[in-house]
Image 1 (tube, rainbow, N blue to C red):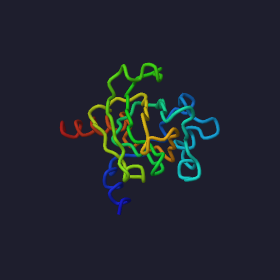
Image 2 (cartoon, helix red, strand yellow; image 1 turned 60 degrees about the vertical axis):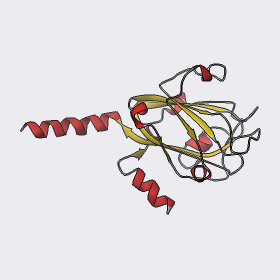
Image 3 (cartoon, helix red, strand yellow; image 1 turned 180 degrees about the vertical axis):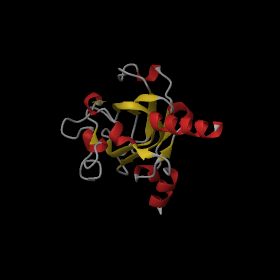
Image 4 (spheres, rainbow, N blue to C red; image 1 turned 135 degrees about the horizontal axis):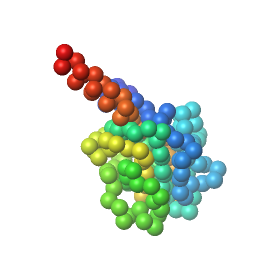
Length: 178
């Protein structure tokens, strides 16, 4: 059932994994042995035995640049019932953020993940806030149980590339003129 609702949400959206600029991806406070590719890279993120784990405390700060400008529609963050993320703040086009200054900027959107969300139900975002996204910063503020370690099994971003959208839009305008 949840698979059907997820595909209905993403009818015109694609998994943006192919548009991530992997050379620029960063994650602060990640465990050295359980790092961000485990949750973000295709193949790794489908393996429930692999996680992104926080290190010193429960917070994680993930910076994801894209190879082209995208529109972000929804996000899927999967984790365990106890240690899965809870409060997630998303920042569009904010570079060089750290734990010391993350709260100085208003987030583009804040999501509180429900038990359904951390089992794999995507969260629709404030689409208007994510129209021309060159990079996304994900601040995982806390987890479901308040424990010291946060574990993220999967992060998937859904949306579209701006170039694709613009070309379709231009074609439609052209069609109307003739």
